[in-house]
Image 1: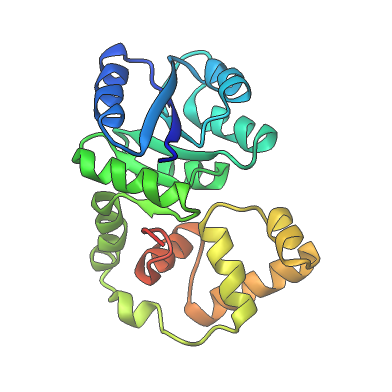
Image 2: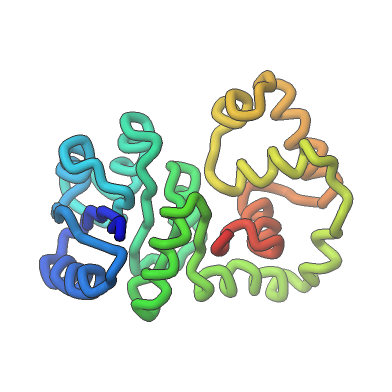
Length: 218
């Protein structure tokens, strides 16, 4: 059986040891390396060529956000899973924008982490249900119903594609290259989609993506 090669990046030794115990107990996973800072993570990916990097956000030398950005520039094929205690939307937005394929909270059960690893290794995206519920729950605090805020079936296929890629953290330039469009055309599709759905910014796009299931195991 092919085992998923995993690199663990976390500045707490106890966390790394715990993760190794959990992951190495899985028949389809193997921890091939561990590092304590973002700079070492970038260096070791080039050497070890892991399938998945489990990336803490708060680390010395280079934090997880900067390390994720650097890795996606140098090794775009590697899948990065953010594992953090930060349940704040701002961190989620930043990590998705940097190129992380999954966002899992350290407070969650180990099964969430394992599910996320398998999802991203298969080319999917994954968002911890705890933070997904928090993000979607903000609609209620704003006095708005998700169903009324986000009508279904109003986007063209291209607008849907563009919005999905934005939610997954891709830049307009990256989306243009992927869809063989100009950056201006991507911006136009984005603007039309947001206008149709009544979205005001990136966090609203992420909320829409959550309701559509784009940031879960797909």
